[in-house]
Amino acid sequence: MITQASREIAVFSGSAHPELAEEICRHLGVPLRPVEIQRFANDCLEVQLQSNCRERDVFIIQPLVKPVQEHLVELLLMLDAARGASASRITAVIPHYSYARSDKKDAPRISIGGRLVADLLVTAGASRVLAMTLHSPQVHGFFSVPVDHLHALQELAKHFRQYDLSRATVVSPDLGNAKEASHFARLLGVQVAAGAKERFPDDRVQITSVIGEITGRDVIVLDDEIAKGSTVLELLDRLAELRPRSIRVACTHGLFAAKAIERIGSRPEVLEIVCTNTVPVPEEERTEKLKILSIAPAMAEAIRRIHNGESVSALF
Image (cartoon, rainbow, N blue to C red):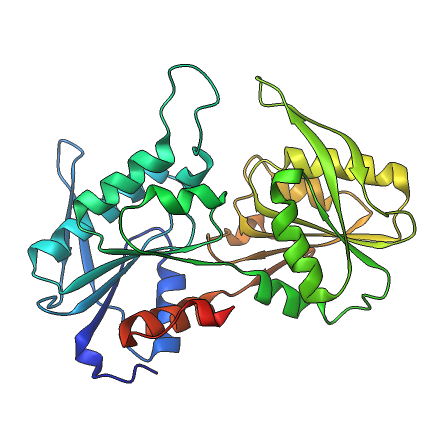
């Protein structure tokens, strides 16, 4: 619960994932304040925060999920509205910062979207950012305001501890995610392995080998997000050649575009697909193999600590 008077904190949500915002507020013990979003005849959006923000500690919850540009503009307008309403501090709570994938200049004449969107958020009024599992560490440095960067490894680890892990190996699809996979493996007290991945200009991926012990072991594939699932499917092909005893797939952000749940879940060797609720997964796309874990308690505790001036890093 918030230790200071609840009137001093105001939590709002855009239309991207109101269910998560409501769950976070239940854990905080504060109401989710109403927001009115209108669309004019010329297709422009107008946002009104329908609760007092003056001298309040304002938190605006909005993951950047499909349609990303629509939800980004909503967030920018909400930040601007809170600033114009004399909020004392405005924290953008972004469970999924999708532009984090645009984090480097790896081709001529392209924009670094992760940095540009970070600048837009600050310009709109964000005085702090709370994010979950950014795609790469350097994205943290794109923001000119404080960033509290959470991860969902504790929630994922708690789930997997229900299984016999005596012969388990955590596998990262590529070396770029190997550090997070190593951290996860340490939480579980198991071995770690990684795929050697190459990405081609037409967005194809190829994993030539897997570095680590796989044969006869219970594999947990860990990635930060699964979109189309191409990398995971390629990794499953390589793992099948090494004859593991079982395979489970885990990620923080389950975007599951292009029927990724169906394509991954159709593999008989995959026993389970685990993700968190940083992004909404439509009911019609869920399968028996999919398990969704809630990060609302962790996000709520981080918001409580930010509001009360306590350490967020102590959570980890």
